[in-house]
Structure formats: structure tokens, C-alpha cells
Image (cartoon, rainbow, N blue to C red; front, side, top):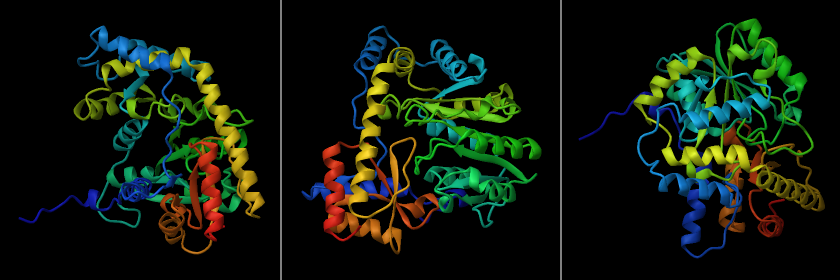
Length: 391
């Protein structure tokens, strides 16, 4: 029997990040010592008080179905957190999801009408991405049947403000969705208020909905990120997405959320109820603890990432390699010569250092390094790249 697969699925490539990670895993299984700088997973344990809150929730019997959009205590805690950031969302305007990725997926599905074929992977509603863009944005747009338009920020040091004219050329009355990720994966760029004001002006002028992906907002260095939905005119047209994986080192707990106007929550809630049903019940109780009682642990992790960033920038400078200095997240974009996919594969196979090609994010000529690893392993990785003539 030959199966016929849906066009929307065949248009999507597997995650390049996980592909590199899988190759690294195979090498490790063969006994190779791989310095894995490919995956964005904090190397810190989940804070002990959060783990205890999860255990306590299980002991108290919170192991059954949860309310589909989230338990009231967590939705209220999220609304309080957002209010502290200047965002006026009610608890009923929040959907708690199993990971921020699910929140993004539901948003794309709720807002994008699709069609078959087309250069961007579909002939449906237009989605504008800022490159380099996290790999799953493209996949989600294609799965929804959307048509992609991309704006390259690499020539501007990965900053948005110098590229606002280019963004203005990309955004039109036909644009259904614009995705803004600040701090950015993969560049670590944090977009300033002037850049976000430019986004606001275009969104209002063309009546565009904007996704503000703020999953790294707690991890910044010397700058304070602005939440896009706080700008005048943006509350009614912004979907704010965040989660617990990065700031609280809760990747395996799978907990995220979206906050949006009530009409979008109603539509996304349908998708939510017919797909994942709800985020895990006892995990949501751990999420309440994370939001309310982990400021010290979050700051310890943020400070460690900043120290690692500074060390990496200095190590590359010692090898006469100038890298854009990220202001947030825990990624660094390393300029590479030639085919970045081939460079990453060779670096893994020969130097045994795993990175991700920039072309996976829409920006050839770079490799993304994650510094969510110990200083010793980061130093070892740079030494191996230098010894193998990769720098």
C-alpha cells in the first residue's frame, strides 16, 4: 500500500536543530565526545521549589484532567505577571498550553487561511518573518497554508530598526500575521522601542495581527525588553506568547501560554480543546510556583548566561573572529565561510562540535551556537573549532 500524504505536511522540513542534535547523539553513542552547542536547553536543573510544587500537586491528587484553557490559579498568576509588564490581560484572555510552541501553533492555525501551492509554501494568507527566524515559524506558516514573506536583518547586525524600510516594503494590507521574537532565537537581538514603534505603525496602518514571542524575555544583558502589546494601538492586535522552558529551566515540563483578545482566545481555544485538551494538571501548579517564587534562581541563571556570553565573545576575538554581541537569550551567531550547512556538518564530524546552520533560520553564512552549556565545554568547543581550522 502506498500512502498519500497531505501537501501541507510534505511542504515542511524536519527541524534542522533536532537533525544536528540527532547526529550528535549518534556520534556519542559511538563513544565520541561531542561538545553539543546546538540545542537551546538550559543546563541548570529546574529550581527545587518548583519541583517540590509539582510533587506536592501530585500528592494532592492533581493528576486528572485540568480545565482546557488552564487552571484558574495559573491563569491568574500569568495575568498578574503580564500586568507587571504593562499588559492588561484578564485571566480569561489566557490559554495555558503544553509548551509555548503549542501556543504559537494554535495562533497560526486560528489566524491563517491556507491554500495549496505557492512560493511560500502556500497561497493563503501572508505571514511576515524577520530573519533569522526560529525554524518552527516557517513550518507553522506552511502547515496553516500561509504564504511567507521574509525580511533579512543580518546585514543590520540582526537589529530591526535599521531594517524598518525593508519591513515596510514587506508588510501590506494583504499581510495577516507578523511575527516578532525579541529577545531573538537565534540571534539574541533585543529590539529597541524605536523598532517596536515602527512595527506598531505598520500593524495599525495595515490592520495586521502581530505575534510577540517573548519566551526569552527574562534573559537579557544590560537592556530591558519592551513587550509589544504595551504600545498604543497594539493591545487589540497582539498575541503575547511566553512559557516556562527557558527562564525557569523547565523544558521537559512542557508549559507555555498565549494571551490575546477574547475573540482570538475563543477560536484558539477550539483548537486547544480538540487537540491537546489541556496542559498537564500538576505541571500547572508547578507553574504557579515558578511565577511567584523563583526570582533569585532566574537571576542566577541569567547572570551565568551573561558571563558565558562575555567569555565566548572574548575567545572568538582572541582568534580574530568578530561576532555580533547578543543582548539576550543564550545564542550567538558565528560568521562562517562558504556553505554553512556543510560547515556545521564538518565541524561536527571532524571537530566534534555541534552547531546549527544559519540557513535553517533563513540566514546563510552563519552558525548558531548555544551557550546554554558550562564555561568549560564552551571553551573546549572554541578550542576544537580553532584547532580544526574552522575559525
